Image 1 (cartoon, helix red, strand yellow):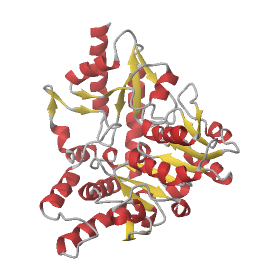
Image 2 (cartoon, rainbow, N blue to C red):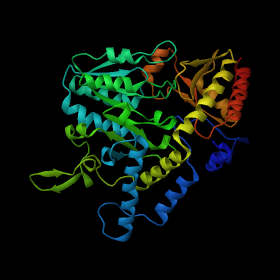
Image 3 (cartoon, helix red, strand yellow):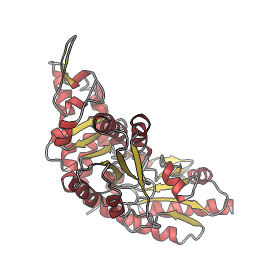
Length: 406
């Protein structure tokens, strides 16, 4: 049984007011709020348990190392990785994708080789590939969405050519909420000898993820969207690909020995984790993932499916609201504009006066905005603690904005 009131009580910020109104937090696609257990774990780690990891032999260092390293196993369970050594811990998806760009793609791709992307990608899954385009002459091939915002996996597969070396694709659009059939894409790519990277920043929040079933080579997640701290995240890497990679950043724990004339790198995954890591952030992420798994990812997905259906119906009743992407297979993420001259920033400001927090702008998805023919949208993105009553608050606030700008 999904006890929404108990879950909401676990997130202290949800009880506050904004502009004299109860907070209605619908900006989860940008960053989710934190449950008290995560806040407590962070406080305890700093106030009672803090030390650097891996290097020390004293009690606090051993304790911090044990807690930090245990998170690797938690992430492996969360993603259903075959072994915790397939998990590289980092600051989030941006670092993860750059690790693949510099550590795997740069030494393996040359001028004329192709990377296939969807038009829905977040800039974090675009800019690193532009680096390779600029510096090594790699070609970027784009696959566009259908009219309803869906992405046909066969079109991605059909984009594979003799020079294609990598498909880098989101599992869930941060703008449209579109859920992509990455399993079909990844299995077809492997049959053709093409590597696959899945951006799981949004998907891992809303649904169970099984990287072994998906069959991807790389899968990136970011902690601050997973009800954990900022500057935390992880990258799943198929062990065969780990063997093909070189280190991205040098220093700290990614080495075994350093001499004047040679360096011997550490074994993976430590080989890809340079310097003092985000110790407390990763401990907090481990607690956040345990919290989500305790609620149950299937339960979270079912709850959010109800929110998606209810919000879709309510928004459909506003004939002056244009929702971008109406595919049936989507997460509870809605990007929209209001008919007329009102800019997304103005709409967001009005909503904020009613205590409703949404995101306004291009959502780090410039190519998608150009494809959709809009300069910016408002985005209401729902999480595990949101309610249908909050959907109603959003609708009331939108009606106010419409009245003001009509």
